[in-house]
Image (cartoon, rainbow, N blue to C red; front, side, top):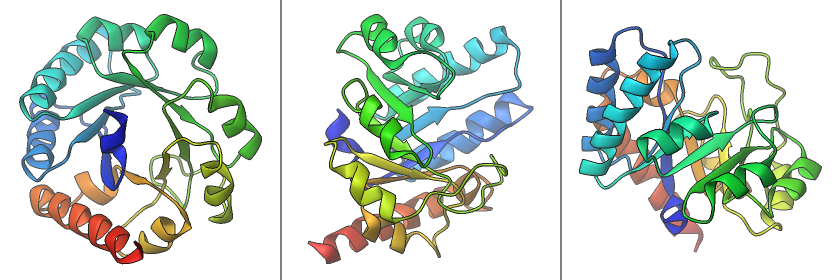
Length: 212
């Protein structure tokens, strides 16, 4: 399953106060070809998160798409998601891998830290670097140098770029070694989410193919 992360758009859910708005936007992205989705929700109550995650699990399963849960191993296991994405303070990665076993995907935030990526690599299935550009989601995030991607790829895990990515600025990030691009606002803030998803995927795959 992790092999399908290469040359992919990795959508991350935006903050939406209304459930139907969230599900509508995700459905548009899935219909446009999105096959990797992370459910990230920093504000909803636990029961609402559970309700949303269950619906997103049903939607992604119907689309043959991967669902990753941000922050919570418990929620991942509860809704039978495909995996979890953890930050520095969520859980030790060796403990997370022990709880998840080999059947779940484990992603790790490494910010701009090569040493952190080295520590995470034995346990994680993919490593996320960012913010690549100034980010609306995390405006205080330290930006990562594009040179960091080549160094982190030596650890043998797919590398996901995140932070301020747009259709206009993504090509140098792919050239630097990113295997996938994680996007929130550059996807879900667009008027035509379905069409934008298709454009993202076309650009990623055509640009990667031109390098091979």
